[in-house]
Image (cartoon, rainbow, N blue to C red; front, side, top):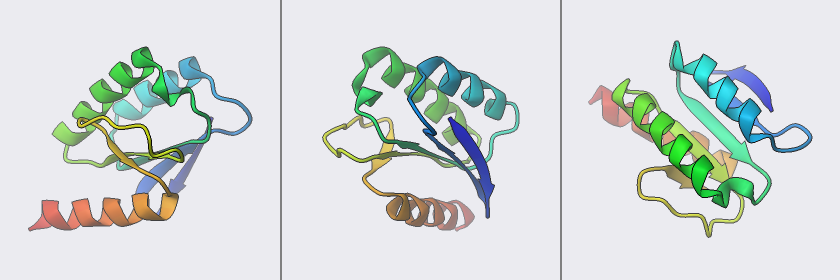
Length: 105
């Protein structure tokens, strides 16, 4: 997993191959000082139920801290009402800015 600091958010993406343990470790570290976060998944392993439950917990934590937690999932067949999922990175960035506007109103 590769972590980049961008304008007003962190971007976490797969670098070579997906490793759930590394993802959860990075999320745990980021949880100490939550900032807006976009995570891009390029594999179809996102549909694992244990991973989804973990992501829901982190998403709830981010939302409670008034920050965005957005998943970019290429195959938009993945759906979970408690997770914000979009098909492209551009849409994730747009969604993040819309959430920030809503929070500031």
